[in-house]
Length: 340
View 1 (cartoon, rainbow, N blue to C red):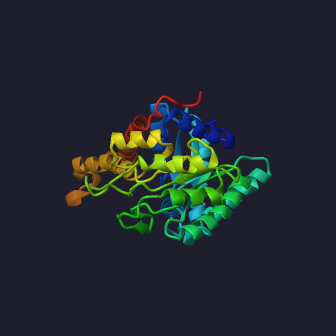
View 2 (cartoon, helix red, strand yellow; view 1 turned 45 degrees about the horizontal axis):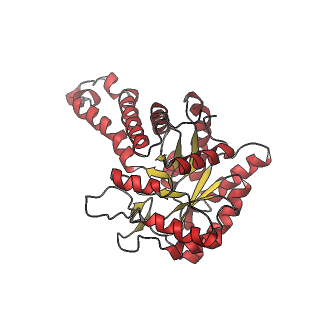
View 3 (cartoon, rainbow, N blue to C red; view 1 turned 90 degrees about the horizontal axis):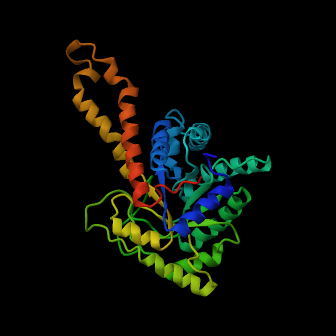
């Protein structure tokens, strides 16, 4: 069962919450980065999450028409086939989708899965993200209610981002300032609007100083202990212990202590993109510099086909990214926890 069924995905998240570990959610933009992520999970004996952002989907759709839905569906279908060769279970997810891209991305993908479910099949994706962090919280939650209802009908889990994450992600950007911290009131309003599971399961990307990308020490102040306040504030009102399944955005470059605190407070998913991009590209750059006269036809020479063959440097890229995925599994405590 390489691609999780809705039931198995719920089990994965429950196991992570109970075991205080999280799944690395790896952004992919090609069949090759998909294989790198799957390989990294398999070598770490960890289940995981594969995700496609709007920019990634546009790239996958081809530069001729840049169709996001085509790109996302194509890679998801491919993943359903090739993932069978890896001895782990993965869920397919779509990353940040702002309001102006919902009609061209998440809503059509929800329809694709709804049609599959109506025929007795499993959904194509296991979860989708609605990024309403650029909207008012009222508008954010109103759209979240609509999407959550559609997601539940299609046996899909929704991820919501209720307050801003700093930095930039596929055209959505926020300043790095004191607004990057979700309040207990924000969490209470979320629970009131979206429920705590009875209206459909959702993952909550709360803000505790998170920033996309990698920044030098001192530029970003993470407060993962804030997640405990949100859990307690909402839990006390509704009589539930640790009611939220949290997502850690902007995880690249975080310290081991920050990650550990986040895991203790209910984080079950952490996004990785910047670090894995670098891990994929760095071996390629090394190969090109070391084989300059082979990959280029210098001074009228013919070059060396074995060095510029995409398979040659592509294998190095895959290995580099897979190694970084494995390191993330160790850091998030998911290594060795795969479903039997």
